[in-house]
Image (cartoon, rainbow, N blue to C red; front, side):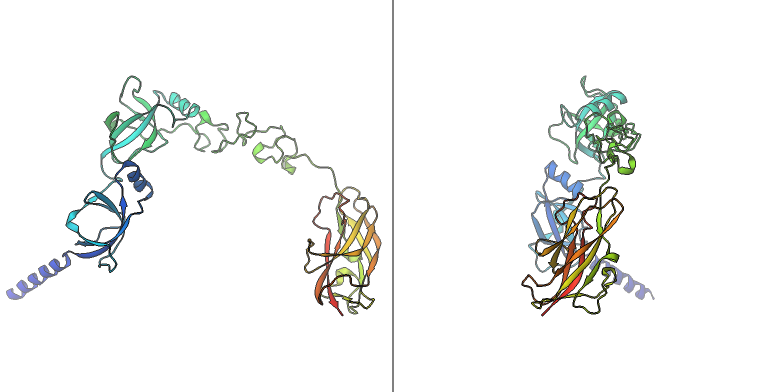
Amino acid sequence: MKKTYIFFFVSVMLCLEVTAQATEKHHRVHEVLTDRTSVDQFCRDGITTNNDLKLNIIIEEKLPVGSVFRYGTKYWAVTYSKDTRGSDEDATINGTNIVLENFCSGIFSYKHHRLKYMGNTISQAENNYCNSNPNEGVNIKVDIKIENPLIEGKVYFIGRNFSASHPRGYYYVVYAGYHDGSDEDYIMDGSSLTAPVKFTDSDNDGVPNACDNCPNRSNSNQADRDGDGIGDVCDDSDGDGVRDAYDDCPTEPGPSSNNGCPEEEGEPDLVLDKTRTSISSDCLTCPSTLSDLGTQRHVIKKQTGTGITINQIAVKNNGDEDAGSSTAALYLSSDNNLDSGDSKFNATISVSSISAGSRKTTGGTSLYNYQFTRSNGNYYLLLVLDDTESVSESNENNNVTAIPITLQN
């Protein structure tokens, strides 16, 4: 039994030794430069250089993705790793010669900052923040021993005196980096720092009340179209009760029902009444009333002296103003939309003036001889009201009616 235990113990130790032995493990790495700018880019955004390598590293455990190590004088970020060797490596290196680094966080070390003095009271700091560009002007370079850099663009209270011109008080962070500086003006630890200052911001739009042109309505963009110092979301330039941000006509008063624009005078609106428009053709089964045509197609026969006849058309004026006289035209089209590729027939239909809310029926026209060189097949006859646009209408998009037709020999 004693021999059995000894054999088992030796076996376990051999397994542990085999498990922990260093072997080639494949890694893909990108170079991280050691100047402050590139290190900051890596720590904040994961940005590395374009210098990348495929390495087989002789090591007991593969390096974790995202770790940084120093090999010689260069620093590399691991973007991929696996427990077996690769077959397309650029080089093989010994893991005993690499040193793991931590540039970015979790280490109390001196971090480089550029700070601008904003005043020794919260009101002074808020006023200076609002009435000047905090990123411009004189600032001091301070290395602060802290775990993570301060937040750029925030204001902190520092409870120590740097100099007569930079006493204890509120400081705006112009720049914050992960490495110490080589030209710092001052060195300090983080014990005299407070959390970032929160200026009064009633609408929580990120703009302090002291410099918010509309402090009670959120408007982080501070838009002010008329330049009067009042934000558009609070402004009502024309005094119509509709704020400029929602007013389509901010310089002309108008009701909210019309988006702040003055209501326009009434206009006519001509539409074809299909229930009173009659058409006949060589389609013997097609009903004469256009509204009853359904999926059938009227027929135009080529060079036979027969064709399609518009017996009458009925035009309604759905607008709230009278419509003057106009002309209806006819086009041959390969689809149901009027465009420059459509062919216009010579025949037209005159439509006399129509009172608002009224309808007028007028005689039609006949299309006997086919006027265009088109192959047989299915087309559309487009009946276009007010073809010459002599009537200004409230809706110019409902004047075209597509009538399905077939061309035959």
